[in-house]
Image (cartoon, rainbow, N blue to C red):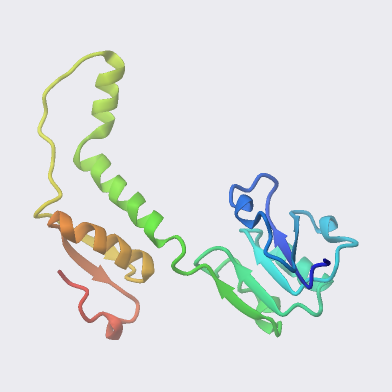
Length: 182
């Protein structure tokens, strides 16, 4: 059966997320490339998946795909994607908002614990085969400020509150801030 929906995927060779496209859904064909020439002779796309290609590559792909109906940025932010040519294009533009929030919240929590528990000292002592007692900070009872209370900020807060951390958050649009203090 031939593919009825073609997606051009702008991704670096070896992009760790490409395995998620295998196997493609029935009726879908992915054409993966990083350089513009990768799409020469490829069937015209219905959609374009941007895996951090940047505006130059996206605009080049748009020029080769006049019938494009959908542009999706894998990232949550659109600052690297939303250039005038993309804004003027009739295709629907979507992004990965929310997809990375849990992982990034865990990363933020790991960073807080790294410093509170002085993990660098522990690793150094382990490498040296020594142990020197020291006091570790606790997160419980501390306050953490979150600048940006969107999906990621709320995911961070939801992981901090059970640890007894007071969360103070700042967002661009304060009228949407109800219930964000703890």
